[in-house]
Image 1: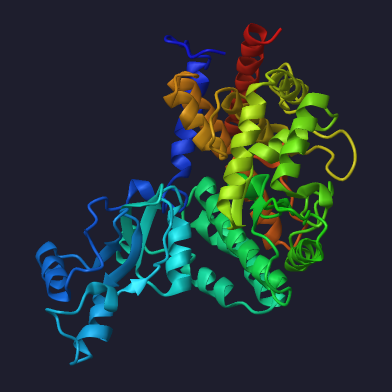
Image 2: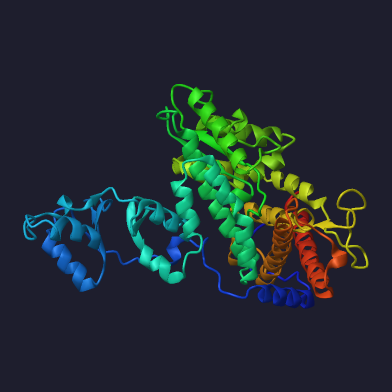
Length: 506
């Protein structure tokens, strides 16, 4: 589907306005932008100097600029160190023997500072700053310094609520400690919802905390295994990769191993790491994936070249589970190890996808068979028998349809975002869907997410099994109307995608 210069809106304007109003009413307080990237808040005017600069010149410049740090760069403009006010207090003022006029900054700077990429999240920066006990994070892109963020700057955004949990995760030495932290998430979600946070803000917070728990679980799994024989990257996928966790995510992870003369896919180190990581996650409360999408399974633990061969085979042979494998590939995000391995594999996957447009037909046919639970007269279609007779699953009969159809549209247009709302934003920005449609679908996603999370929170408070089923009979008239509009928006989105496929793929 080529980019259109004029796009007509598909929304029902009356339904759109009512759904939009409901979405806005759910947001009672300003959200902390945990998921936003650092590029949006970084200070791009970074003071840099060479390692040979004297302390007096650097300290004078810091005072004149009213800044608390300087980044030391080499002749290639790559960062090699950092000097902060704290360093000056500890290593210069406290040492009477240091000459301000003759001592180069390289003698007192902190070498090899911790850095992040500007596309990392604000939450990730908070986690790193808390974990490392530093207060300045240089941001590096293509090997060069492009910005900086500080703990003081992040705290000004608003008090970072999960900071206590971050510190607890970092200091955890036992699986039981991580389990105790995870067990706090339902209560935390309940408190946030009662205080007026949006479900999306809460879900992002839950997802980011889950990622930190996974990182620490990975570290615990690696203890005692020795040095990895080659570099590798651990990634999460599914709702973990999209940062869209509700309260009951299972495991979805894999490992990419660097190529070498020896095939390390079956090396005992990686076998043990994958098994131990999966077992620890299960003990924490992330149950084993029923489809075995875990790095303990050799199918999801391969060298980079083997991964590329596997992806080629999946697409060329049109394997039966291709639709599922595509969602795994393009909803994934790295959390530990060599990120460049993940980036190379993701780039390769997009290249292969670009040669196989027929895959979109497969994805559409799999998604297109699902219909929203609305009858001809606008009544809700509920389960006819079983434990949930008379109920409907908000996630499986609505929310997941938004995720799947938006994924299809995003992949068609080579959009690299993994999150559903970010994908919608890129589709609108790229002119692929009308801005009204984007807001309509975004509102439906927010509303359905609200009811799904609310259902889980309610059941957690009663000690019941957590799921996303609701009983329409006990909903207020307003809630029923809101859900109808949300499901109607999802149906409109499905129809929009179906019409696009009629134009694109023969």
